[in-house]
Length: 99
Image (cartoon, rainbow, N blue to C red):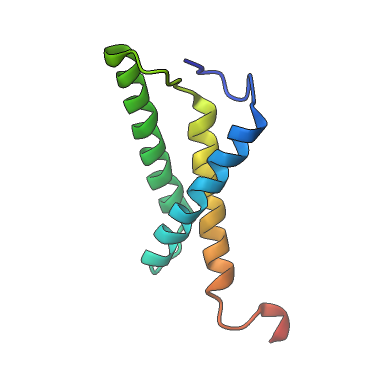
């Protein structure tokens, strides 16, 4: 269990955690009319913490080879926020620089 942020960053899993939650952020932002980043970040944080807690429970009860890591929570949340920003950019009808 790692509770110290970015103490031991493994770059492949760092980028994987970001890229796998971009669609979640895109989906959440497309479903809310307000496109509030704080709501997307809170939802992604809750989902990520739930996953990490499930990994902890599985490791303790079944001896599963999973690690609970605060870096995963942070990068998952960041990936979802990135997805929400991407949704915001794509959903604009006309680029600002054209008007």
